[in-house]
Amino acid sequence: MTVLPYKDKDGSKKEQVAEMFNSISKRYDFLNHFLSMGIDILWRKKAIRQLKAAQPKLILDVATGTGDLAIEALNQLAPDKVIGVDISEGMLEMGREKMKRLGVDDKIEMSMGDSEQLLFEDNKFDAVVAAFGVRNFQDLEKGLADMRRVLKDGGKIVILEFSTPTAFPMKQLYSFYSNAILPMIGKVVSKDNSAYTYLPESVQEFPYGEEFLGVLDKLGFKETTCIPLTFGISSIYTAIK
Image 1: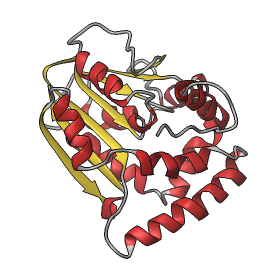
Image 2: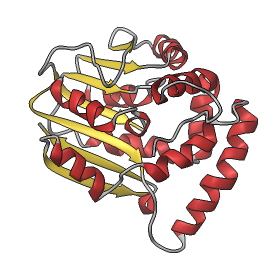
Image 3: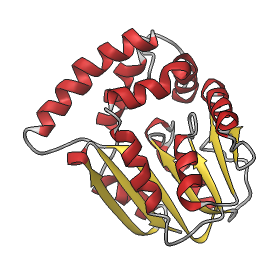
């Protein structure tokens, strides 16, 4: 089943996701940190640490949003360049303003781009990363396959994504928070009725843990690993091309 942000509207998932993120772009960073109580910052730091040994010089950040993961990669790894791509111009505009404010717009490039049709040649990047983005792909396997295509042989992919806690009582607490509290706060702050209802629904439909590793294996990735975070609320997936 394909989960859509706006059930009462026409348009593909890709089009609706772009519309949704354009709608909430100005409040996205605040809501991200507020709704996760800042834990998302720690998750990103741990995700980028998975690339420390590789020391990649050219990094692609897919579904970059406002560029928080790209900034973390720049801070930790000091690469020559990070290119962030996203289908939401609203998110990219907020990201570009952030890069200028931080004085890193010469190192981090924010570009409009479709994750399932990346406009880069094969074997270009030393590493490809994504945070909370692959869940929004219209075609998960197509998007992941294109991320693999632009990755150099031996290069590493790191994906940070929401998952679903399975152990009592976190499973029950998380379910209540994500289905009752999160949509209510998201609606009030972002003024978008659907965006934070879509979030828990999309998490529930996403193939997390071993199932997601199976997708990576199927696409030809090697050395696939899953690192659960914060009682399984999110997970870091790594793999080698």
